Image (cartoon, rainbow, N blue to C red; front, side):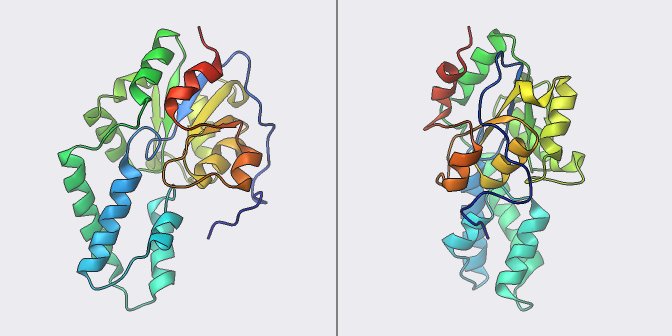
Length: 234
């Protein structure tokens, strides 16, 4: 469970922006795509259909967390009688149905990506979603072509909050992590990016900023629309 205090697992980095900004690395779920809310709705509905109450508090603890961790979390919360495999099969089916119907792009994402592309800023995605699902969702949303590299859960041994996803994304872009900016919505994502030495912007989705968020993040913004002016790009 998240503890509202500075993490002791990974180092805290100075929360200042690089000058110049050489690249921007985005989280996907809850940052570029409105998938976090759809995931939580699917899990709540799957639990209800199976006769189990999956509380909002438990659901919010899963935001930004990779699948293996959420499975352990749910199993530990409900105990051995909970139909874990059926729950995730059913919630995945409900989520994919929502995805087929169309998942919204987060407000401000398209104009920000277009602006960064015009400015010649390389961009990457670092997500806890596995391949090829991550690429397929970005493609369906019309965003995939903006990115030079997409790092997924399938590409790393140690997912967020470990820094590996962001370090791999920076390496794929051929840039020093300290010259990049990361954009995140979750506590685990902020820990991951800052531990990689990247100045991180939090744009909250389902999780509110906390004391730790303010300590780690270079900025906390209401929406992606505010990031363009903050980076002072031409």
